[in-house]
Image 1 (tube, rainbow, N blue to C red):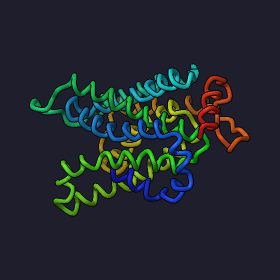
Image 2: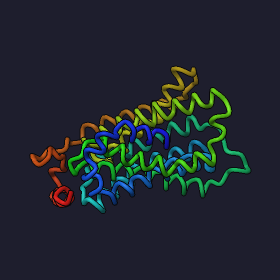
Image 3: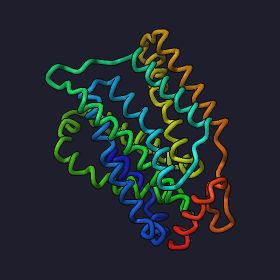
Image 4: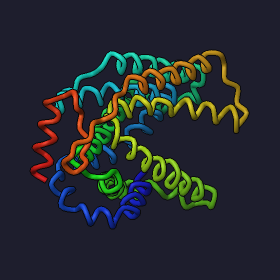
Length: 284
C-alpha cells in the first residue's frame, strides 16, 4: 500500500503542484487522512494474523461503513437514510456469510490473540473510514480526485516506508515474491485506489465504504472461477446478499449537487454540511 501510494503521488505530481495552495489550505484533513492510510494496512493484516482470516476480514471490512457514517454524522452533520442502513446491514451480513463459508487457515496457538485481533480489526475499519471521509471532504472543496488521492496516499506511503525497510526483506528474496509485490502495488493499490478516488468525488464516504463490501465477494468469485475452489451454499448466499446490498445502496444514493462556484459538489439536502463546505472553500 505504501508503494501504491507513492505511485499515486508520482502520477499526480503535476496536478498536485497546480493545486498546492488548495491542498495546503486543507492540510489538517490531508494529514489526518494520510495517517489513517498508514495505520490501516498494519491494523488490517495484524487483525487477520491474530484473530484469523474470517474474523479479521469481517470486523475490518464490516465496521468501515458504520464508522464512516458516524464520522460524517458527527463532523459534517450529514443525515443517514434508511436505504443506506438497510444496504449496509445486508452487505455486512453477506460478508459474514462468506467468511463463515470460506474461513481460510486458522491461526496457530502461538499467534492467536482473538481479542487483540478484533480490536485491531475495529481500528482498521475506523482508519479505512477516516481516510475515505478525509479524501472526500477535501474533494468537496473543489479539488479533483487525482491531486487529493496523490497527496493523501503519497504522504501515507512515506509514513509506511520505515515499515518496508524493517520488514520487507522477504519481498526481494526471490523473483516471484518481487513480482507478486509489484502486482499488488500497481494493480489493486495504485489502479484500484485511483478508481476509488474517482468514486469518492461523487458519493459520500459512507456509501463508498458500503459498496466496497463487495471486495470479499469478488475474491470468492475469483477463487471459484480461476482457482477452481468450491463455494458452499452459505457462500453463495453471502454473494447474493452482497449484490443485493449493492442494488439497495445504488438505488438509495442521490448524486451530489454541483454548485456554480468552482464546480464544487455539495450535499444539497444538508444545509449544515453545505455551510461547512462553503466556509472551507472560501478559506482555500
